[in-house]
Length: 114
Image (tube, rainbow, N blue to C red):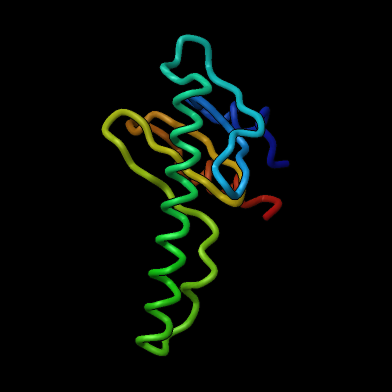
């Protein structure tokens, strides 16, 4: 089941959050000692909304220009950083350490109820 508790149970999870289509944090959890707080997660959620909009525009444009299908709708995406990576699906996101993170498990869990 996709919820913040199950996302935080992923090995190494630093934070998990649920956000609105406008990027507002609806709920969040952070690992104790992690560098994330509501302000950082708010900025991250807004970045996720913006990146999803761009990815959707690119997927739709690619399909229109090439006649190829299967790129739209965009459901999941990740932003890879030097220290941490965020994976989002729908209104849920999880932040994992970039090194050693099981991104496949995160994607599977996030997509479980989508």
